[in-house]
Length: 162
Image 1 (cartoon, one colour):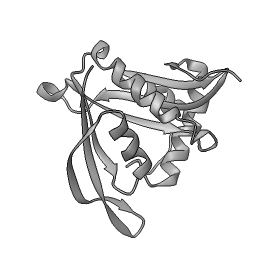
Image 2 (spheres, helix red, strand yellow):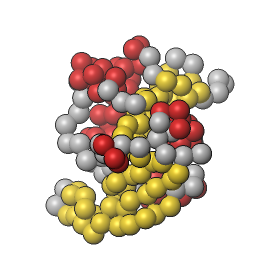
Image 3 (cartoon, rainbow, N blue to C red):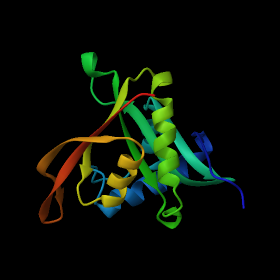
Image 4 (cartoon, rainbow, N blue to C red):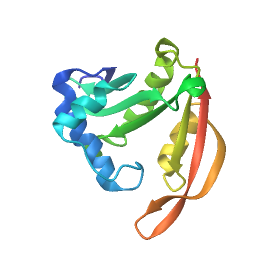
């Protein structure tokens, strides 16, 4: 079996990236977006990022991340990121490979750290992953994420660039 590689995305990866991104959006438990991407809007969206990378096994895209400034101006040196792993590929530590690659890429993209603004508190797999990778919880916003007919807390995480 071929090993899993994380690399910057290529144009040919976009259809799979859009499919995986939309799968996470449709789940409604992790991303704040409520509308998915089309191939055209995905092409534009991924091109606008400071970095976008995919986890691949051979020619198959298994997951992705995007890395971009968390804010503008005097706060633009801190990054934000989003990760998505195909449902059929979960449980294979692909998320960990994506997170570690994004942290390793921070400095080369001009960032001094990485902040997650809205990790849903009930997303325990993501929270454990981030903590295993060295992120620290810096705060909680009560009821910050609307999930169907209820509100869940969101957690803010941070790590310095390596």
